[in-house]
Image (tube, rainbow, N blue to C red; front, top):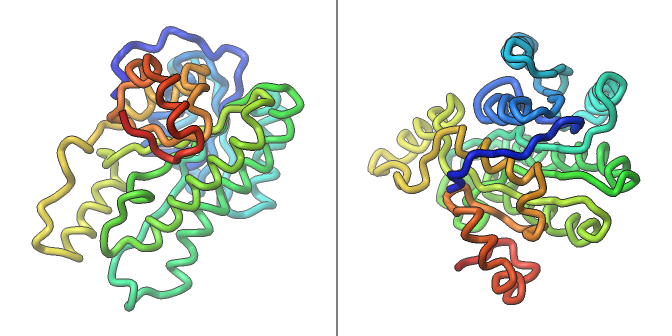
Amino acid sequence: MPSKKQNIRLDGEVALVTGGGRGLGLSISKSLANIGASVCLTGRNPEHLQAAVNAIRDTGGKAEYAIGDVADKVSMEAAVTKFSDQFGTVSILVNNAGIGMGGPFAETDPDDWWRVMEVNVKGPMLMSRLVLPDMLSAGHGHIINIGSYQAIDPAPMVSAYATSKAALLRLTDSLSAETFDQGVTIIAVSPGFVRTDMGLVAEDGMRKANPQWEGFDPDYVFEPSAISELVCQIATGKAKQFHGRLLHVKDHLDDLLSHADEILAKDRFSLRFKM
């Protein structure tokens, strides 16, 4: 897990955080604003978004929001246009918005299952498609996808979530293969179990689905600030050698960087690497 304080600024950068009104998205938004980025938030709850923007502005940061469903092309096009008109083109995209559902697959409503794919896969695809052309034109940009360890180590009762996050990882390395030599870095982050309202709901659902469940491994439980710090490090370009990869918040980025040549030589296109 990253431990060093961030000392690189993002002044002049424009960061768009989906699902930025609360929880992990809010923590990421505040952290990016604290190091100088103008922060743009999207979400579906105007009260949460307004409160988030107010909190950032109260500490001297620049922020704006737009209401809309991350999987809806029309509303997200309008959001990106609004943000670009106010702050300039988006140079950092954090695809944070996501949902999950639990329960036996044989009892799952197919529409509910597919809705998880809409938000967790179509949303990042759509947002990346909206901002990537300007990033490529500028020869500069960062796309950070909030993934999950469930993508590579799935558990029972979460087939929709695990499938969507696996697809997000493949989107990450596929886009990276197209853009890594054009100044755009695309990296996925696995946040572990995050202590947020959404995380507590997920934990409650797991316990209801399996009363014998002993809970999440304490080594994979993190406060939102830990993930936010790693996102900021990526946004400043510190992790660009690991384009297309999945970085887990429990990993120490400085340690990984000290072994970067060895890691990259062994599995250049791997979704996850091991020391």
